[in-house]
Length: 189
Image 1 (cartoon, rainbow, N blue to C red):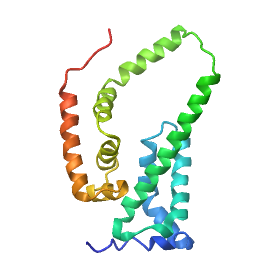
Image 2: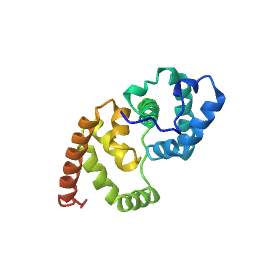
Image 3: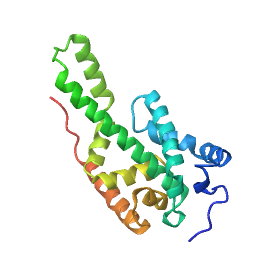
């Protein structure tokens, strides 16, 4: 096992030592903020969730086990769980709103905005389609490595996988995404 990063502190202390927490926070807040911001549409929600990640870190710091992976992998695992919790809460809110909301007709401005958005997001839709064909755990692995810049080992830790299993899944995922993106694009008539 490689030597721990000298910049990494004793994570178990960040729940009780404000200085240790501040150092940990300063080391990771930018990366965690970017991770969260890429997964939610609202910048205010992203800021709130980033704060929630660090609150969760304080609460769970005593349970960190360095033998299971790096602090970065552990931290991104916590962040992933916080974002997933928010998505579940948002889905519940949408279901409730859908039950109580009435239906309304779209006006010309609504239609124009919808058409503009469809046109503007064509490439993103194809990429999303390719990623959506991956199993959830594999998609999360691809996002952690390709989007968030984690190493395969750190992403494996965040997802509770062995590094070997993560490398195999990542290789298969990349191959599948390339195949999906190579398919002819479909257009709406």
